Structures are given as C-alpha cells and as structure tokens.
Length: 317
Image: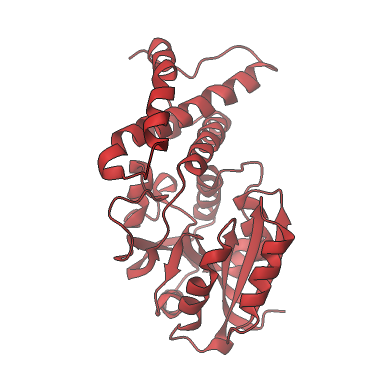
C-alpha cells in the first residue's frame, strides 16, 4: 500500500563516505519529512559492511529510509529493486553523484500535480561550485553533457534516469527498466520509448535542483563506457535503429579503429599519471572513453556473430 507522496531511489556503489552529505541534503528538503522516503540500493561490488555503514547513517535521519542490498547486480537492476520496493505515489530517481537541492522533491511534486496528464519529468543538472574545475565527472562526454540541461525530455537519445520522476503506477505498468541491458543509457532509451508510446507527456523541470558533487574515477569510467558501447550496439541492432550508433559515435572505419587501439596504452598512461585534470588531459580522456565505447560495440557484434551471420560495426571514413 502506498503511504507517502514521493520516494527518492538512489542506487549506490562505493559511495558510503559521501553519505553524510547526501543525507544532509535530503533531510533539508522543504517538503515535510512525513511526505517522502528515501531508498538506497547498494549494488555491484558493494559489501555487507558498506550496507551496515549506510544503515548506521540512515538511522538518525528525520525521513523514512530503506537500505536494500543487491550485490553483483548492475545499476539498472538496483533502480528496479528500489522502485518496486517504494511506497510513494511518485518515484524520483537520482544519480549517486548528485546532491539534492532543498526544493528538489517539492518541485517535482508540484509539476506532477499541476500537469493534467501523467508525465515523466527530467531535471537539469549543474556542477557544484565546490567541485574542482578540472575534475572528471560522469557528465564529461558530449552525449552526457547534453543531458545536463534536460532540454529534450521527449527524445530517448537525450533523456536520462539520472534525475527524473514519474508516477509510481506508471513505472509498475511499464515493467520497470529493461534488465537485459546493464548500461543505464540503453535501458533509459528503451524505457522512454515505451513510456511515450503510452501517451505520456515528457517534461523538463524548471530550474536546477541537483548538483554534481563527486569526481569520477578514470578506470571506473573506462568500464562504464565499454559497457555502454556494448549495450547500445545491441540495442541499435534490436531496434534496427542506426541513429543510436551515430549519436554515440560508435561507428569507426576498421583501419582507424585498430590504429586507435594501438595508441590507446599511451593515452591511458597519460590519464593515469598524477592527478587527473580534464583541462589538461581532457583530449586524452575523450580518446580513451570514445574508444572504449567503440570497443564495447565491436565486442557486442563479435558475440552476436558467433551465433549468426558476420556483420561489421564499421563504416568507411
């Protein structure tokens, strides 16, 4: 039975040190504490010791908090676990690298209540002023930067679940995020396509109420982009939609791909040496992450052609 207005679902992996700041922001919402709940879902390489830390910090919060454990799973599964456990009439998904502004929850609720039809709402994102200007974040690549303004909420290629809200029953009816994809971007594309077919409105939340606070880790981002390339290539073929491949720049001529591959250790070494500052090493990071996306796409096709006819991810330059 639903017993609260809105539930914030946050999937966590290796972020326990930041919990005091995250909880402080969530506790300072202008919405009364009785009107919302927070669900943390620990996933991936998270441990039971980290779960105990989350539960310890959550015990003193003024709002209800659930701490769930989904080890070995991906971010997509973790979000589903949190959403299906929620009691709120509306769901808010918030990326683990974002801090909530004081009007985050009330602003989402106000927009939903004013709109005449059920809607899915995407919120804008800004870098926190306290974050070093040269810090690498999960909003580094151009297709990630495009998400920050939330300017095209009705386009699956420009929509993200990193900061969004929708009616809980709408999410349940749609079956949640597609867990055949581990990468959030691929799961987000399939989710919004399904939502829009049901006649939902797609809106942008006015103002900025979520802020990037954390520096991303280079190796963590390499793994993420490989997985995104892998899943996006699979999705493009499943939907027979080449626009996905073009949007995420997954196509590459064979000779240029293998040349990139040969030089990649050099760029990786540059990014690993000393403190990473994207103002200095940004081009190297861009080369590495772009190549990881393309390498993931090549691996996806290699896996698919093992059971089907040979095809190529490449096009002529």
